[in-house]
Image 1: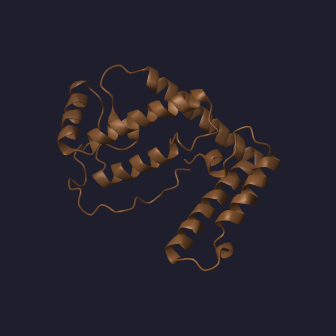
Image 2: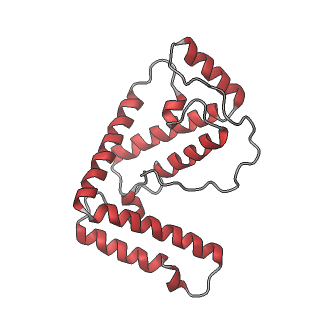
Image 3: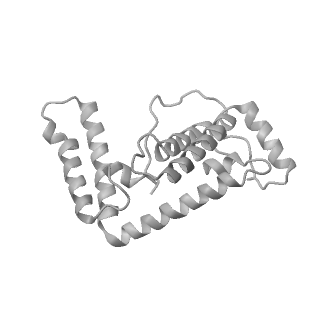
Length: 193
């Protein structure tokens, strides 16, 4: 899931008026029709950004959806705190990235970039100090998991460690694709919501 507060560039305690005002300003900036003659690539990027802005506004402008989103956000922050404080035993990097042990390298890479985008501390100016620290810890954990799972030899060692400790694994722990060829040059952004 995306951080809608970061997308709209507002604080978590923003009022409905502040949400609407931020939305209107961002629509003015990113609406492709307002930019005149621009390249197709730039126009697509602006359309994608506008879709993100619209999605964020729809979620935060509706009090019920905002409450659900807030619940999700609070729950995930608690999960991050718990996972960063419970650093015992062998880490399950598949669980950290939220992928199946049979996931291909491409699937792992896609999830990695989605998580990096979500937990981007540099653009999280409206986060509290505690949230920023939690995000930084989660980013370190995600980076470590990606480094292990994106290398076949390290991944195999990780699988052996998990198996020796009795961790449950899926039927096939071999990645679906063991080559790093045919990777897209640009990682597609997938909505986690």
